[in-house]
Image (cartoon, rainbow over all chains, first blue to last red; front, side):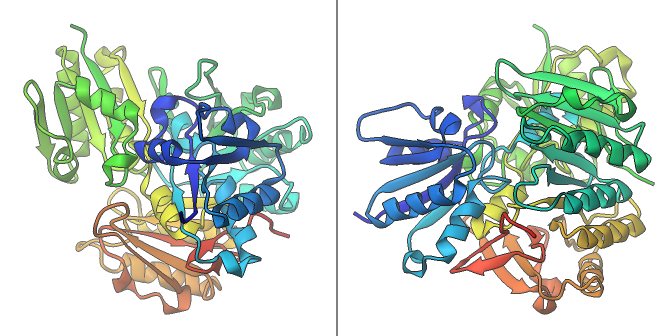
Length: 244
Length: 244
């Protein structure tokens, strides 16, 4: 049997946000590969091998997935959210680049609901106008580039979705982010802290940037900084469609 | 019975990309409201009233949805893709702002797979690093702001997802966009033209920006301009995770 490699997004957490396309791929899989907390979202069954792995081993994991597919297995690499947004799809193509013998493997990328879309929906419509997404992890890029992008995003008046704002190993980056945005004149912008979106632990907080504190974000938080026109209506926050 | 208003995303076209959460909302609805081509994606059934409407009447449509919900109907406003990305959610909250008597209506926004995620998945992983999304329609914002954002996005080295690149009424904006990006030194960037993604008419084209022509985009195209590091592997294109 020909092996296949599917790179699938499980959405932000709620099973009702997993697309039928992804569910069908999981049902056909012989092997599930991914970061352990995501693999644990796939129910075990006969004939299915689960391969949970640690964080920060994306390339090894991608190589293992390609190898298993080349041996005829039906492999699904799982990410949370969308696999193409700060997740496993780029790592698989990077691993593939060094392995020309596998370039003809049947590979599919199945999109999913990425965290910023679920966070935005929980809060209203803060991404209803032009926006950007910036990953605050500086494991794979210099912090100076993150700072530059934050300044240019503020100047462009994009709403800003901040992925991975804070981790135990990087406590200072998000504090610095808030400083940079204050320096850029964003004090009055509305900031949304969306924690564990779509799970039972979901918690949504909204404050003006001047009142935002670094501790309001943790590893499970997605932060959205509104643009200069973003405003509240009732319990909601939204980006107006019209800008003059 | 208490009325409810649900603002739901139908994904880019393929039924297998509609989340179970949205399918459940459609199954419970008494009224479906939206732009006619999107309403036509919901199968008719007894007890369900379809309210298709024209393009560019978003605010009237939103007001109608709120009114029906206030009368006790189970209303679902449908958008393609995600309802919070250049779609109906912002219009509903804008209409709500003028109607304080409806601020306590039960409203939910249900996220969906927005076009750029499906387009990216079809091509590989061009959004695997920091990126932005810019709507090229200047119906609701000045063209000068679009130009400014394109320049800053190029300077920030974001991948750029271009929504609504071209319509019959705005043939020149996308041509100007390509010029701006050329002036910004993006000649060698990879551009993905993803037309009618996830439908039987899907067509994916990839060229270097220097070879991109305005006619390669139409109303059904989502354009992704890669960042400066974006590269090809086999038939795929991806943004490397690591940037120095």
